[in-house]
Length: 91
Image 1 (spheres, one colour):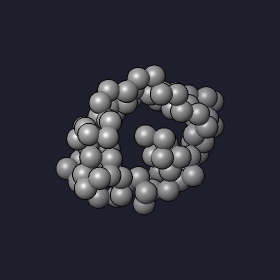
Image 2: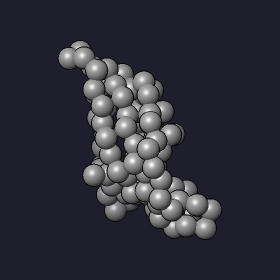
Image 3: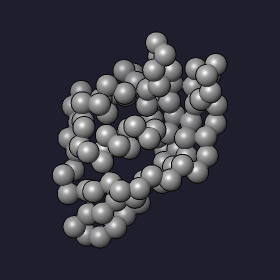
Image 4: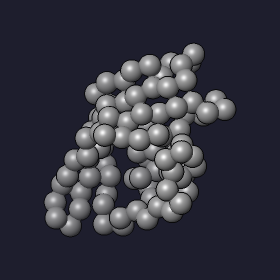
């Protein structure tokens, strides 16, 4: 999750798509150039250990936009595919 947050922070859409599970990955991804992601707070994790195939992360991602500061709160699900963790979805 930290690497995906960093990709949002630097605007690396290619990395985000590469780390997105094929079953839910969009064909394209347009990032908002006006958002500046600056902080990630991990609140909880479930599973996601070395022997797990799935895991979840509860987090808050903080950003600034022309309208002021904001926060995205999400409970993400990830799945290990060929040794790599891929983002499945968030709610």
